[in-house]
Image (cartoon, rainbow, N blue to C red):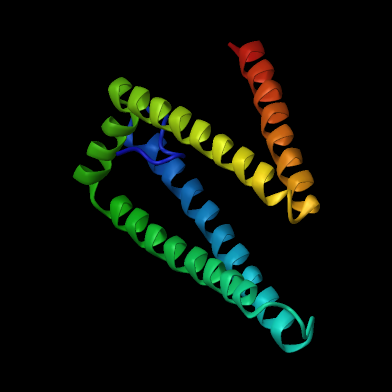
Length: 159
């Protein structure tokens, strides 16, 4: 299974190795985001809103710890991949395989449709009790659609 950031055409292991190193740097930034999220929850609990709901603090802490844990695991996985030439070659071939790319693209389209439909229904139902939720989610759908159109135009202009 190809991940979100795994597609590409690589002429050799060295080019693929550079991409893996960039991916490791991205996961380091995800660790920073996880630490920030956890610290935000801790500060909110300790110094911030006394009336903050405990479940929201737990949610933020869980996201923070999850980001850190998943990022560390992926860094370890990628570092091991860099040390083994045969595994690196197989991963490079899998990342460049057209069939895998098509499967990943179809899975991404389906996941985005499900996500947009889910956001839409939460916006409709949740907006009955919390209008600000409806506005935030409608803005999120709008942001997605604008980002899609802009990305499409940029990519189409480059091809």
